[in-house]
Length: 143
Image 1 (cartoon, rainbow, N blue to C red):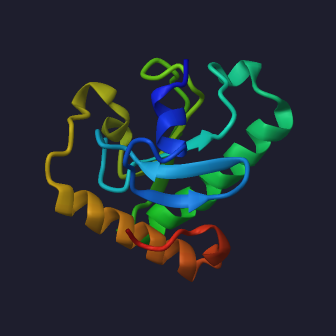
Image 2 (cartoon, rainbow, N blue to C red; image 1 turned 90 degrees about the vertical axis):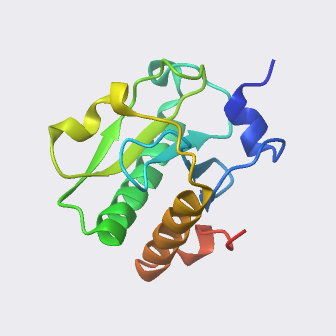
């Protein structure tokens, strides 16, 4: 059975994509810890990061690094946080978010973002930052 993320990657469910390539994609989470909180997800369905092929994991972390640079730039954040938790959806995903202190990593504070305009704005800001950083070929057009 396809995971929620497989359905998003297949275009069966909506998402605000900020990165796409042949191995992975990145899209904003609908339950952000901070504005710009993004998930990097491999196209291959793999549940746990420890079971992932090292080449694919390396690629996903490379994408996460690019996203991290983008969120730092777009929100003028001192850090880009990275977390691999793996409890929410049984499909490897790397959380990348602009962070200002350790409290930004508290997943109990994540709430469903009901303001669609805020998510749209975050997607535009991050896509713009990624293009400015030279990642144009992997940044999809605004939708």
